[in-house]
Image (cartoon, rainbow, N blue to C red; front, side, top):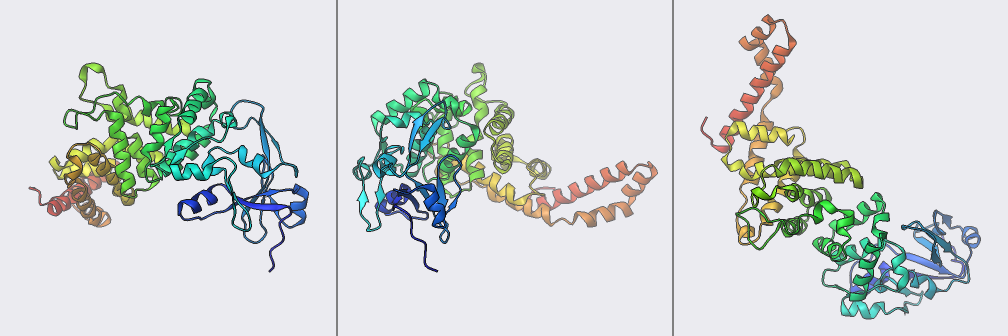
Length: 430
């Protein structure tokens, strides 16, 4: 089928142009159309999908084509804009409303680069620089710049852009960010190769204290006594996050790493540098953050387990079979074995993020607990239950006339069978 002609003049814009010039893979191409109306696009077979401004899907490829537009600030936050999308809007005007110069380039059908704002030069110099003063009208751009810093960690932030971002935060623009957009940008930044750069930029412009104050509070709080003395809790959190990223961990693990020590910010000064009880405090703080930002349940639940149990996982080399089984049960490792692997990934990252020579030390807790989990899972709980009902414990339960007694007897028998399996697997004394 012959593709329909695009009304007006179509240009590839934004990330596809940037990534091609950087030699990075280009997965999606966005187009801007100059000199056309919405009605002309519809008549050519394009399907309208935009709510806030005219965006259309190509009838064959599904690629997005947006009419060239300008925007005018009309209210607070990222929704407070009036959009003007008419055939008289030029390509340069459309590019001028974009956030960074490296995202404000276009490519025509002959492959020529249109670069009115110096994006190619900034790519060569490794610079994140805003296009113009309209940048200050949209607070989401603070998050986007931080995310691009995580994607392009060798790029530095232009001083004028950093100054403008600080002014935006001081003016309260960051307070207008809605939770969904904060999480969307943060989740994308967490999955970049250098996610710590996102939080460094947010701290530099004072936005982290507005969107994630629980994390921001960790800087300046001393780490535990056996950690590297030059690393405070905030830096430790970043090292842990980077360890997870280096291992290619999924989003839920990276989020758990970001949340795992939040409770240390609330440690009473008189007990520092020890952080007694920070796990329980961290569970509450992580839950509050998840609720506020509407974090997906998979991420929130993993963070809760890691907050509560990472210290016990670290200490598990000292545990006997019974204590090891209780740890597995608190982590729900027998019902959700795959999630327990993710818990251990986060704990290993926590181990690597202590600084000094810690990254060179092995982490035997992980294979040991996986072996204990495998041994416990091999126990046939149904068979143990049947044997218990046929034996004296089951008779005793029936003599009491209560099903509860039978259930307790079965639970004790299954637990003992699992403990014995763990003892054998870990070569522990019985």
